[in-house]
Length: 258
Image (cartoon, rainbow, N blue to C red; front, side):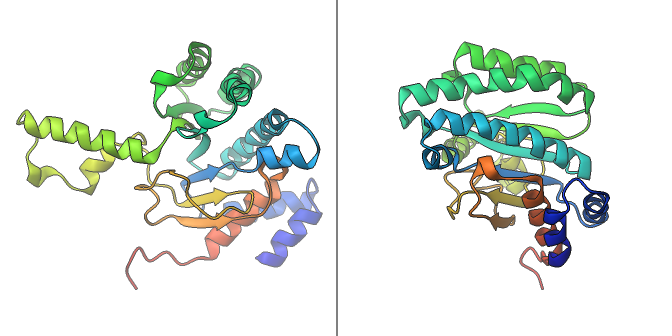
């Protein structure tokens, strides 16, 4: 498989590349893939460009990987777009990041509709600027009838906050007598998380060489397969995604068993 993936990289766009994508599609496709899209700022710095140039380039990658994930049969793709900690970044960078959903969805929304992709959002909406929220809500509304790939943006998202909010909601129901402690189990708790009905990720991809979760889906990633790469997100290509899927297909997932 690894030799085939190497050939795929060299033959991208050829009939052989398409065959190898078909080969991947015949294997065990992860139902839910989550990606920590890291390295935009470093990509820009290496080219003596402002950090926002890296974010702009990174959105082009989102478009390509979304199309590929949909093509090979991934059911849900969750992208870590902006964390609750990212507000600490320079104001100019944050302002630009808040404009990116508008820019991305304005050009890509017709394609998402055509390709049967459904847009979702998880995160704290309260701090998001109105123009950002309006753009995302429009995409959610206009793709709500689609039943293909779920494109789930984690925007102003932090897993610790998510878990605390879930505990608070459960505690409130218990206090009001609407929930007994015996009813609280993993399934119930998961239903109070922002991922809602989404299956836990089968595969997590993180780019840029960093090997940490950065407060991302801490509960949901308990038995997820991790795949790390030194490639910066703006340089992440279809062959890298295919490689991640290929390596996922070679792993044995025992979920604590034998």
